[in-house]
Length: 75
Picture 1: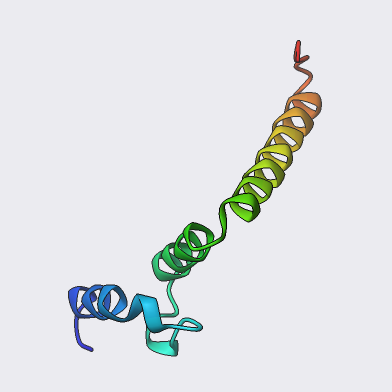
Picture 2 (picture 1 turned 45 degrees about the vertical axis):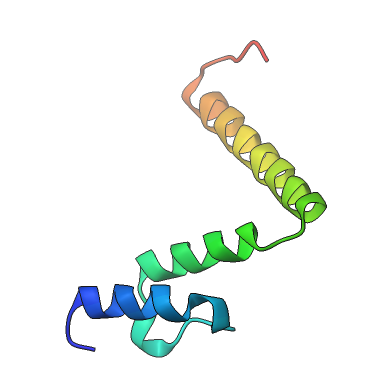
């Protein structure tokens, strides 16, 4: 594959059959897209648990950053 377009088209064409990211697609954009596709393919209860866990993590990170900077959150 010579161009980014070639890589993107390959990714889209073969996404459903990929078990892991091929070395040729080992770039941040494809890793993120692959993770998003994996999440979208989860059963709904598993997706909800994943989303809740992710939201709790980011809430924790936000509060930690605010504490480090001396801000106080009301929630």
